Image (cartoon, rainbow, N blue to C red; front, side, top):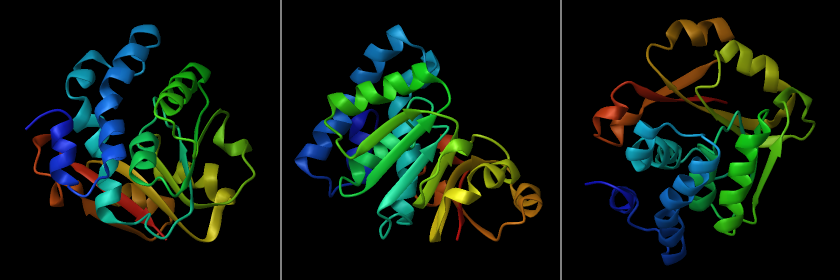
Length: 202
């Protein structure tokens, strides 16, 4: 199974509107990618597995269900934030990256999909002031750095949700965080996810 059908298979309860938005995603990114390269050619070929389904592993875990405001920092072309914003139309998403041209793509995609609950901003995360119920990112840096950059932004009962890969025990220990690890292969059997993990910090 390939393409957007893979998303529909793993998430059978999507609304018609969500299905439309997920279906439009690849062509939107192909159009933007021709102008501003944010996704490699190999990854575009595997777009729905490598980017969309990977992002939606967070939705499978259900860790954002009771969160209202979500910061996705170092979002690059908009992952995991854009797929999660489609999945959770009732939450506020703030997608930030320090590289302005990447945020131009994120804003363009959000506008085309009418994701009015998404704010995209070119800014360094350290300079933000707001508090968030959840903070997500995908393989941006070591967890000790993530902690230093964002500790002032997490609400009192907030959660960090990171998409990472490989052996994370030493990295978690160095961070000083008490974290739980879930293998994405628990949810999706595609080979790409064999070493991919979701790390949650309360």
